[in-house]
Length: 119
Image (cartoon, one colour):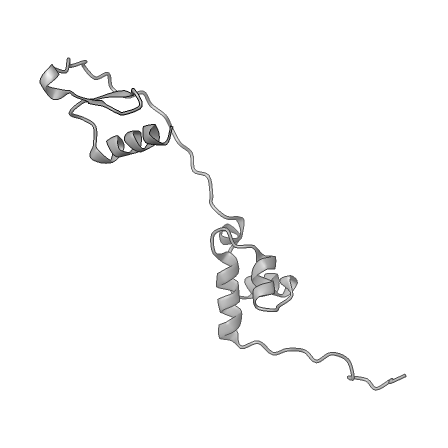
């Protein structure tokens, strides 16, 4: 039996730049401290200690904050009848018929047509 004092595990020395890199990785949105610790071969408790040491604030640690929101009704819009000249009717092969007014963006129309195409 070896009774030498100091014969146990050696402590690893981490450069400050690497510690800060690990802390930054652990603070990234959606990051898990334990996963980051495993990636860098560090104990997760050590990562938490470094987060405290290098000034990770409580707000950074807690994630996104909620802010108050007030919902107000939209001002009523006077209904304007669309003339037939402002409407396009598209007949699709599977029997769908889409009527598109002048206020529809190309991106919105593409999403609708893609959704109908997948059905």
